[in-house]
Image (cartoon, rainbow, N blue to C red; front, side, top):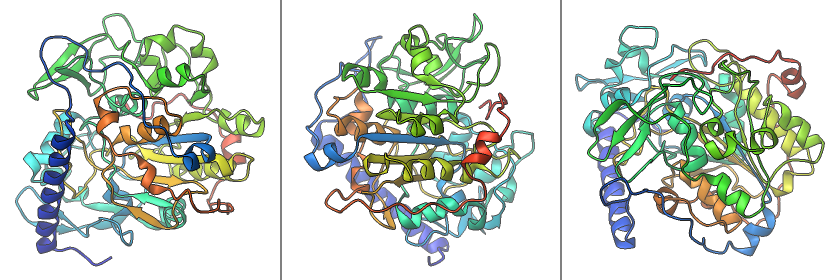
Length: 460
């Protein structure tokens, strides 16, 4: 990839503005919006019928596996990937440019609250990254301008070369992991027309199991921030689960171990969904530990839709949690690839938020929540295009939309209506490719032997 100096960065910003205006015009023409009105009427509309999927897609994809990793920006992992929208430079708050430095996968942890997003975004200038703070204290300075050595994340680069890398997958909201995981099952955290959950609840666990008195924070339509002004985190808005249950399609959410009052399932998005937490689905559809996915694949019990959340050690989270994340993801891909499920599966690997790390692309602001910054996204399937970089603008509801369209499930809210599906990553006219295992330092047997941990991936 040719290096991009300040002049080309300016050109990128102009290009982004053109793309943003084009997107807004398209939304206007289609009559789409992020919701409107006033008062406390629900923002989420009743599910509506989705377009009938093409026979080629519907007959070929029977299993979608969403693997959720932690806290990396696109530039942090793929700034130097050939053909991707990367950069060799970062912009400082003083208006200068600093060359990105190659570094290891293990790096310092940066704050990634909505306030951090706002400071880094800086009204679209994208120049506040060097002025925010590490989670342990102190200003990031030029340390923030770095990318991970491709050798340290070789399995991800191998998947990108063989399958599809999405270089414009944006977080739905400029916020942290709690809302990101909600967006991956619901497409939105709107609780009414004018307010959405933001950041994280005041106590752990983050859900219906939280202690009495736990509150959430809210982002308002006028971009106000109501610290701890939101409801107890046991929510009733619809999720993809409602559509799957309505169609009698199987699903599971694979998570680390959990004991009441511990951190273990802090990333269990469905612990915050009342209809799941207080029904038989809590025991039937929430599967722990996360390695149960290997058991279900071998037992021929892989559900139609799966979400897989790792332990802290295997999560790619900055801050010294370890280097096994790329191998963990490769082990899941290899388990599916060498099973009976390969020819009927689509695996989507996505990072839940940007982790405060540098990214040069200005996220389109299409409603009061965001979009947030870019995160990496890989799409693996026998029908995925080969070595393809898709530049299509995605958000987390794009993954939901692909699932909804695949089974003609309908829509949940404004976000899955407006989002572009990830369907352009596939070519269903091609014969399914044979699977070749992804080389990795650690294999499935390593993770099955690994001691189970209830250490939190992150508390932001």
